[in-house]
Amino acid sequence: MKTTLVIMAAGLGSRYGGTKQVDGIGPHGEILMEYSIYDALRAGFNKVVFIIKPEMEPLMEELCGGYLRRRTALDGSPVEVAYAYQDFSSVPAFYAIPAGRTKPFGTVHALLCAADAVREPFCVINADDYYGIDAYRTIYQELLRLPESGRGTMVGYRLKNTASLHGTVSRGICSAEGGKLRSIREALKVQLYPDGTLRDLAEDRALEPDTVVSMNFWGFTPSIFPALRAYFENFLRTQAGDDLKAECLLPVMVGHELDAGRLEVTVLQSADRWFGMTYHEDRARVAEELKKLHDAGAYPETLRG
Image (cartoon, rainbow, N blue to C red; front, side, top):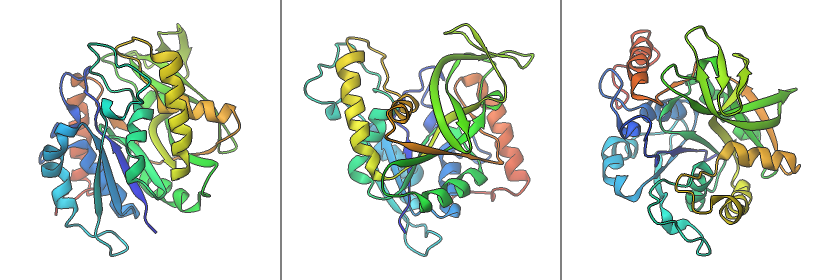
């Protein structure tokens, strides 16, 4: 069965201070998405779709695409590689792009840009996050069980393990019951403090450290794309306006579909710890964590062997 890993890699990395998606941070210059690809392939995935800016393709082919085409998936088939482009050409004609806008329109728009390249159950992730080996095994098995429509899945993480001491982050705060996602709301300015407390500065409220959050590690079938398109078009009509930074976010869209009764989402737990780079100050910690994983034998000396 074909199963696809979709990697959202078109973000600008403005808070990080550079293009973090292609920052070589592993012991031998590995970029974070290489760990996701390696873990997904050994879990059983056999196709990778990169969502990028068009000008990134030569670099992405050099970093990942070229050697991936020479890899063999667990089922013995060659790994399939495809590119999808997130740019303004895919924005509906009824919406006029505001002068001066350079920022992509967020994760809903990103995933929509991959619609023509994804025809099978898929997992969608951020390029600049490390999700862990067990997470891919867990979501892969759940994807094999998903019906063709009406259901999705996600891997949840604990808020205390996903925030940064170096600035605020945006997180999808989840309410789950009986292994099912009941609601999700976007906390736009989550701050972690040295004493371990967390606060949503946008709403001036304390957050529990063990709160389950979405880190954009979702699993769907292609039946999700019409709902994504309808939601994105409504966002452009009613919310985007002339805002140069307005984003249409996947967790918010999922919450909308949950509330409407059109989608059921299972919440999976992973034994692994998430980590990622929102700010450049996060880099040293992530590099240290990756080195520990290599030293412990979780990864070989090189991921490209």
